[in-house]
Image (cartoon, rainbow, N blue to C red; front, side, top):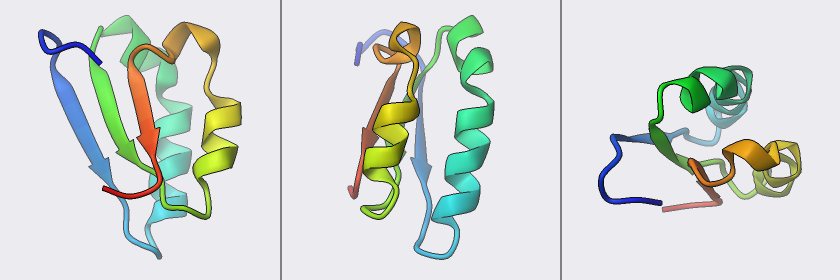
Length: 68
């Protein structure tokens, strides 16, 4: 992650993580087109799935982590 880009921190609790994760995944093109970066707490249950679903061209803009 770069220190010159605008950064969005995404936090989802245990009950909200699935909804937040689906929303972020559905907006990856918007993230890419607006040159912003995301620090994304996915929750441990969804972390591996999210990693697999991230397209290569967006991986430099999105940093998923299980917990912060």
